[in-house]
Structure formats: structure tokens, C-alpha cells
Figure 1: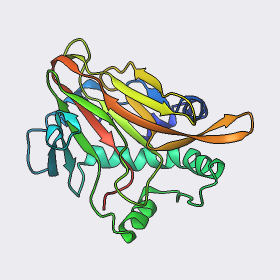
Figure 2: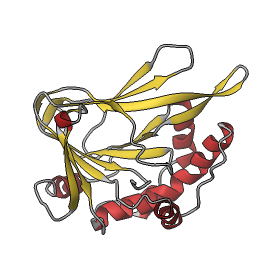
Figure 3: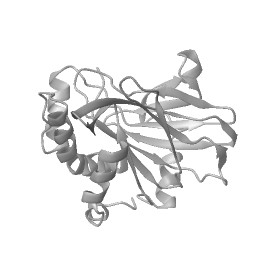
Figure 4: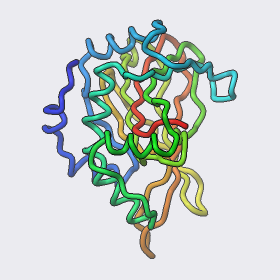
Length: 236
């Protein structure tokens, strides 16, 4: 796979954390090379790597579909999940402290998995999503159980304007007693976006307050779009 922990070492994590604090999301350009994106997209028609398939229209989630990987995860997905998690733990713990939440997250993903599995959250949550013309994903949160890691990662595996048109990733931020604020993210093939799963702290005039984040995908006009979702907690 064309991403190694060494690639993550070269990133300015202090700046990435600052942007996550300010906006609840941040883009890492070209985390994966095109050939890695294509290899991951090519998994979608297969049966063996996955534990289940969801057709969004059957559940009121939108239009399109996705598949959850089974354990053991493909090596590329496992490496991404394991390497990204410890980079996000310091911010996750600071957020929970600022929101006066008692949970603190362990240093390694293996330790966090032990916590999830002890809570009965045994099913892997990394997934591949597939959209075609007119497909979209309603605003939602990927929670799955009591034990929730507050950040997740999505990697666009298709090239906008070439493989598909439309289909932008949309984040909304629900602030107390205010209308929701939208973010439309300009992603290219191989770009990763880190974003808040549920709530995040925002500094106000009287200290920190919580905003609630949701995410979705706008309607595709043409073509096909694949995305890899890296969620760090497992599902009950």
C-alpha cells in the first residue's frame, strides 16, 4: 500500500489539530496514491472481504450502498486504522476533558479494541461506500454503541470531474440556539478528511460549549464514487 506510518510522521499534526479544533474537520491531501485507491475500490464487487451490505434506500439513509469489512480487515485498511488512531488520541482526550466527559482513550488502537469488545461491540466498522448517478447519503452520525471514538476518517477513492460529478462531502454543525452551519469539502482522489463523529467543544465567551456534527454526501450527477470509511470503534 502506498501509505506508511512514515507518511503520517511527515504531517504537521499541530496544525491539523488546530484546524480540527477550529472547524471540526481537516483535509490531508494525497494520503493514498491513485493505485492504492483503485485497489481498494476494486474490492467492492467481491464478497469475501465483507461481513454485510447495506442498501441505503431500504433504511431511509439515502440512495447508494455500502459494505462493512469483516475481520481480519484487509492489510491496507488495518494499517490505516492502526496508524491513524494514536495520532488522534491526544486531541480526542483534550476534547473530552473540555466537554467534561469522563472517558479517556488509551494510547493504542489495540487497547481501545479491547474496551469496545468488552462492551459487546464486536463487529468491525470500516466500510466501503459506492454511489452511482442520483445517489446521495443523508446527514447522519456513525455511533454504533456506547463506546465511541470522537474522530473518524474518510478517504475519497475516485476522482471528481473524471469518475463522477456532484457527490460532495457535506458536514453540518449544530450550535446551541443557532441554525446549523454547513461545510462542503473539496476532496480529490486519495485525499483523507478527519472529522468529528458526534460532538466537539467550541470556545465561547463563557468557556467551552458543545456543537453536534453530522455528515452526508450530496447527490451525484453522473459516474461512480467510492469512499473508504475508517471508524475506530466497533459496532454492537
